[in-house]
Length: 482
Image 1 (cartoon, rainbow, N blue to C red):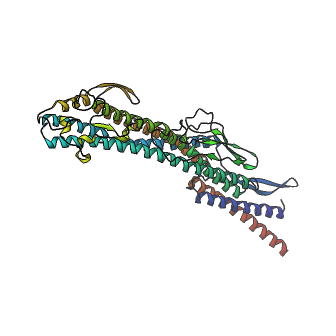
Image 2: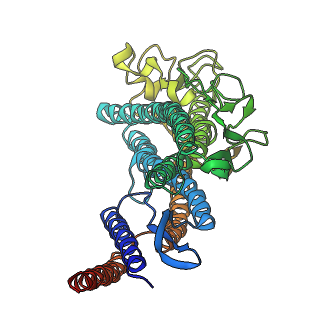
Image 3: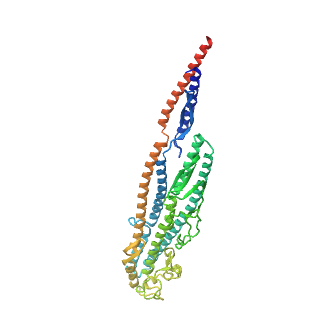
């Protein structure tokens, strides 16, 4: 090898070593950056006239594992869905209460049953009657409050869907822009690697809302589809359509056309819809499940409890003083009835001094014009028997025979079971997700120890090439002195 060839080879080695050192420094600096993929310099031999003339850099390479990335991204959707369902049911379960601790809805029913017993034991007592009225008011307040909670939760779910649609549409536009930039630059450049990392982060954001897959196209661009095969980005981003709603009463439903679903170019993406494109997971899957299935079912259960209260204590056999067919202690404030009774149930004004009624009518009857015998227990015992009677039910969440208090315990049990189930799903999904994150990190992430070992080798290579140039310079100087 001639001196000039040696110098050129060493010079190219120095340049490549410098690039490799810079790449290692970039890797170490971004070791904890989300979405960052480990870089390396792609090298090839320079051959001139059949003789090796050093090395050259062909660009920046990104370590990639498509299979692990796709699985991890799918589990990103699953974790997001399970997290929302678990946290929501935890909140609902805590609000409804736990029968083992005797709080929430079950406590109000239990307290009412106790207050009835006290009133029966001392029918002449004004304080016992006042306690009974307060216990009844606590039941109606609790049912009204729980009904309001369901409405609020549905409204929040709908609002979060709308916000999520904005996020996904914006993210799809970002990917369209990144695709355009990648198609106009060298894919082996550091700029291209940074753009691909950014695109990966944007894809992960979309995956939180709905499961997606990608297809690679020419010039480093990609297309984005749902896992069901609906294109979200094919050359250009397609806009997901959703209209936020203003009302969330029990009569407002998706099936009835009152609430909006998700569509893209006319394809129905709404989770649970009878469509090939219906989304199967992610935040959208959880939010639509809550808005259109879980929360309406809970509302129906609360209505069933309220309906049982009204009908049980309106039995004409309990109170002969009231007009047959009229309500008893508990009433529906809407004469037309219908869904949403839990939010409307109230105390009959005839027994409530605050509404112009009289406490003694609890003992003497809704339709009584004057006070009766102080020791009369008949109506109070009739209410107690009706409240504690075990009746067969076949409504949502109530399959079997229950007393009124047992119905409250049943709905508390139902919400508790939903919480436990969704928390177990979340735990399992997070475990799988963390395993894949670690696997992906080991394949594409930055191991600082390995990078520092590579840096030591790079330094040795740099020193060796520098030594070659130094020796070549000394040889040239010697030749010049001859």
